[in-house]
Length: 265
Image (cartoon, rainbow, N blue to C red; front, side, top):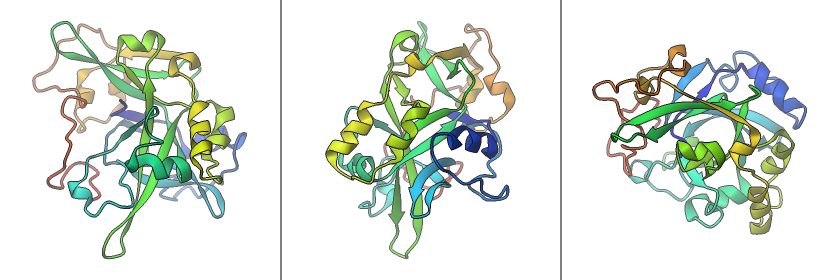
C-alpha cells in the first residue's frame, strides 16, 4: 500500500530529470501544474502532480489522488481507489481502461509505510531512493465527468509485492519506474490488453533500485501535520502519542460526506 508520500523537488528539477527520457515542456512557474509547494505529507483526495500524454505531447497536470472510473455515477458512493495492484490492475473493471489507455508518471521524493510492532502499534518509516533521485511512481489516471458537465482528473498509484529489506516493514510497495521505462509506461497508443501487460511486466521490485528507510515520528499519521520534521529520523522505540493511527488502519471503503482535507467532491 502507498497511503502517504512527499513531494520536495521543484518542477524544474522534475522537468530536468524527465527531459532526458521523454519530452515534457518547462511550463510557466505560476502554472498550477508546476507551482506545487514542497509537501511532506500528501494524503488521499489531495491534489498531486503527474505527467501524462496529451494531444500536444507529454505534459504535467494536477490530479485528485483517488481514481474514479468514467462509469461511476456518484463518486461519493464509490470506494477511494488510491492504489491499484500490479498483479490485477489489467483485469479489474475500475482500472482496466486506464491500464490500456491512460497511464501517467507521478513524481515523488519518498513515501511512508507503517511497520506493525510487537505491541500492536505501528511505526512509520520514510523510504527514499538511495541515490536521492526522484521516485517516479507508475500511475493510472481517469477523467470523471459529472451530470452538470464538470470534469475531475483523478489518479491512482500502482503497487507491487515488497521484496528484500522492505518486507520487514510492509508487504506492499509503490511501483517505481527506472528512467529508461518512462517512455514505455506513458506510451499507451496501442491500447490493447497485450501492450498493457507488457508495460506492467517491465516494472521491477523497488528494493532492486536501492532504497533508504528510516523510522520517523508517528505524527505523520495526521494529515494536519505537513512539515520538514516529519522526515527526520527518530528512535524506532519512540512512544506512540495519544490518538496516533496508521492511515492503513482506518482506510474507509465509502465516503458518506465531504470535508476531508483536499476534498474535491
